[in-house]
Image 1 (cartoon, rainbow, N blue to C red):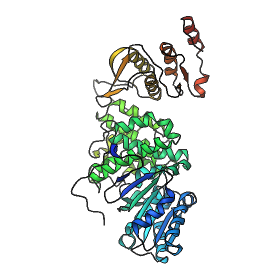
Image 2 (spheres, rainbow, N blue to C red; image 1 turned 60 degrees about the horizontal axis):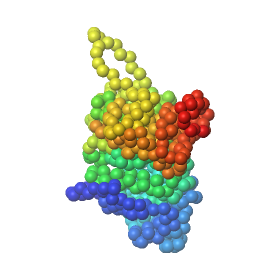
Image 3 (tube, one colour; image 1 turned 60 degrees about the vertical axis):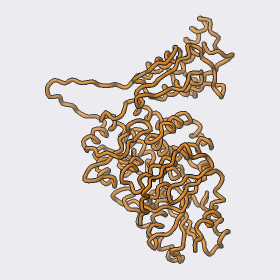
Image 4 (cartoon, one colour; image 1 turned 180 degrees about the vertical axis):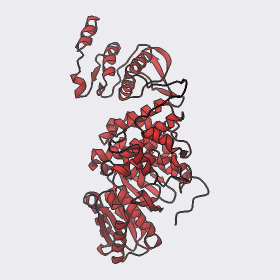
Amino acid sequence: MPPKPSKKKRKVDPSQVSLGQQVLAGDYDVVVGTKTLPNFAADIVERTKATSYFVISDQNVFKLHAGTIFDGLKKAVGDAKVHSYNVVPGEEAKCRAVKAEIEDWMFTKGADRGSVIVAVGGGVVGDLAGFVAATYMRGIKFCQVPTSLLAMVDSSIGGKTGIDAPAGKNLIGAFHNPVRVYIDTSVLQTLPDRELSNGMSEVIKAAAIRSKDLFKELEDNCDQILAKDEASLQSAIWQSIAIKVAVVLEDRLEKGVRAILNFGHSVGHGIEGLIAPKMLHGECCAIGMIVETELARSYGILAPDALGRLQSILLAYKLPIHIPAETTPTAIMRQMGCDKKNMGGKKFIVLLQSIGDAGDSAKPVEDIDVMKTLAPGAEVVPKGPVSGTIVVPGSKSISNRVLLLAALGRGKCEIRGLLHSHDTLVMMDALQMLGVPDFEWKDNGKVIVVTGVDGKLKHGAKSGEIFLGNAGTASRFLTTACTLVAAKETVITGNARMKERPIGPLVDALRLAGCSID
């Protein structure tokens, strides 16, 4: 049976969740730490007092992490009370047949209503083992130990369990809360880079629907997070978890606001059902976020600038933003028709209001509107006179020129229609290193406010260098601007491709103007 929703709504403020603490998730809590995996077994035994323990993992994760918990449980309660079952890695394990295999195995091992399942692994293991726990003898206790970033911030939180069916993902399942969720962020150091980016898709989603501050932090700390910097990762994970917990506690059974957690998933699941396992869940949902954001923009709900920021951050975290060539809009629409979020023949999609605000629920949309957004192009046949206004994206080159001019000016300057791209984000970061105050966004991201420094640039880069990646416009404009910096030396650099770009004529011109440059 699903848990009864609380009459009194409980909310968790993401700002109140600090590192090394735990966040209450209603009937259970989530513990996040680092290098804490060896301590999990003792805590599980202390909290559950079970007749026996069943560690469910996959063959890869058992060697890396689950074996540690398995050995810890045996040490605590004895070999006879602890058993382990490893499924084949991959989404194909999340099915009726494997669920039945686990249940039959548990019967042979004497599992009873006092037994506890410990799920150690990614989202597949957590969803599958949780569903076994929800239905075995009408429900037994279980603990979640997610070992992938995607599972840490998404599938292990919220009490959803389930398996896939031929018709689509997660169509069979139950709400069943764990006793506790244990997260050790140090296990992410062994996570492949692609899997890290896959998980970051869910973190970006959480920021996009509920926290403009986290979104800005993810923009600023991209390099550190991709390098698996422990502090940056923990901060992103904590805030993402707190956002999901807050939403879940407002709507435990997904009757309203909880639907915003599906941002990007309606289209994403449609793509995933056609192309998995070639593309991962987070990758498909990244594309889904772009398509659903384009739909919101077409309705006039969302400013074009917000779409640009979303595209830029997904690309920065090495996530795709374009529909795969192997799929077609018609096939995606057909796959979306099996989505459990549909009601009354209507597709319900989350329409972003602004960065950090997804409103209070998913909205019904017309198939023709979704189809137009998915289609690479459309033929327009005018009937009679045609008039209208088309808003084209901003120019990267002009945007960076305007940013620099506003920064060098005096007082506040409001810029509308700025293009959000990798080059403009690099320019903004560099200007802040040169003493320009934080940028302010207004009118739901349509306007950026720049406070000029009256030409008085200061070199404040912590690393001693201003790294511009491969941003060509930023490198040329800033090479000139940095001759104004009040410092002994300012170093501008970039990636290998940047260092191959010719800049001799500019350097010669600056030297003729009396600038000291090497």
